[in-house]
Length: 575
Image 1 (cartoon, helix red, strand yellow):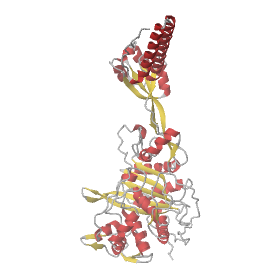
Image 2 (image 1 turned 120 degrees about the vertical axis):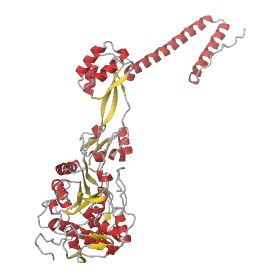
Image 3 (image 1 turned 90 degrees about the vertical axis):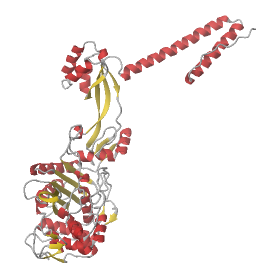
Image 4 (image 1 turned 180 degrees about the vertical axis):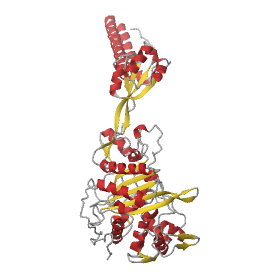
C-alpha cells in the first residue's frame, strides 16, 4: 500500500476552519478508500458532498435575498424598512387620560436610478399626496443618489403612494412622539425625541423608556380637568390684559401633588421646530420679586417665634426711615395697627418693623425652612435657584418683609405658602400621584401658627384686599402681592407684576384636604396693576370651576376660621 501525502488546504477564517478540517478529513478518507481498491465508493461520496455544499449555498442565497427584499428597502417597488424604535411609554394624567404617546409614521425615500419615468412619477406622486413638496420631489427624482423626500407620512398616505407601484420609491417606518392635546399642559409635559428633552419627559425619562419596553404607562399628578380650567382662565386674562407673561399652579398642599401647571405664552410641542418664544416654564424657572405675598412669610415667622401675636401693635402713623431709605404704605392708614390689621391692610411699615425686631438670623432661618433660599425640590430639571440677598442688614430685612430684595420662582412661593397652611410642614412639590398625605421634609411653623395663617388668609378675602378672589361656598383665603420691576437699573412704577396666593377651604381640621392656587401676571397693561385686581379674580374663577373636581363641597356663606370661630363680615366688629 503506497502512502499518500495529504493535500494542502488553503487557510480559512476561524469561523470556517471546522468546515475545511471536515473536508480535509473526507478527502483523506477518499484517498485511503482508493488505495484500498474501492473507487466506486469514492465517487459516490464525492457526489454527495458536492450536493450538500451546493444545497447549503443555495439556502444561504435564498435567505439573504428574502431578508433584503422584505427588510432593507434596497430593491423592489414600494419597499420599506423599519427605522429606529422609539421605546417610550405613554404619559397620562392622574385619571388615565393620554398626555403623550408614540405613533407610527413613515419616511419617503426616492432612488432616482430605479425610476422608470421621472415626469410620470412626479405627476402621480404629487396627485396622490398634495402636501408633498413638488420641487423637493423633482430634485430627488433628477438627482444622482437615494435621498429622503419627506418625513412624517401617515399610514394612509404611505398606502396611497405605495399603490402607485412606482420603481425607486421606498418607505422607512419610524416611531415619533406625539402630544394629542397640543399646547395643553405642554410646559409640564415637555417633549422628547429618543430621550426626554424637557419637562416630565426628561424628569421621568428612564421610567418612561422602561415603560415603553414593558407596555406600561407613566401617570402624572396632573388632573386634566383642573389643567383645562387653569389654562382657560389664565390665558384669557393674560391676553385681555396684554401681559408679557402669566403663571398659574394648583397644588394639593397636604401631598405636594401638582394638579395643574400653566405658563403663558404657550407653545405646541408637536411643532417645536418653529420659533417658540414661550417655551420657558415660568413656574419653575422664572424669577420674580413678588411683593406683598411675602408678608405671609414674615407674619408667620413673627407669630411662630412669639415676637408678635394677633394683637401686637405696630406704629404706622408715619413713614419708616432706615438709613437713607423711607418706607411707605401703598394704602396708608397713618395709625397704629395690630398684626392682623397690618396683614389685612398690607402695611409695608408694619412688616418692616416686625422683620427688624426678629433680626437677620431668624429671618434667614425661616426663609430657609420655607424653601425660599433654594430651588424648589420638584422633579423638573428646569427648577431654578432663587436670586437671594448677600447680606441681611436692617434695610435688607425691611425689603424682604414685603417681597423685595429676593427673586424666587412661583413654584418656590407656592410650596412655601403651602407649608404655612397645611399644619406647618414643608411638603415638596411633586408630579407623581400620591397615595396619601406626605410626611413632609421638616416642620416650618407650629400648628397654632398654621391655624392663625388660615384665619388671616380667609379674613383677607372676606374683608381685605383679596375680596375679588371669593368663590361662593368654597371658603377661599388668600394674600395679594404687587411689585414694580427693575428697568434700566431702577424700579419703574409703570412696569409691575401682580400676584395672588389662594387657599381653599380655610375651615376644617389642619389635615383636611386643602388646595393652593397661585397666580402671577407679569407686566399687565392698564391700571390698576395690583394683585387684587389682576390676579385675585383669576384665582377666584379657577377655584369656582375646580372645587367639584377636587371634591370640595360648597357650604353656607357664613364663614368661620380654622378653629371654628366666626370671622366678621364686612361692616361687622371683630371680637
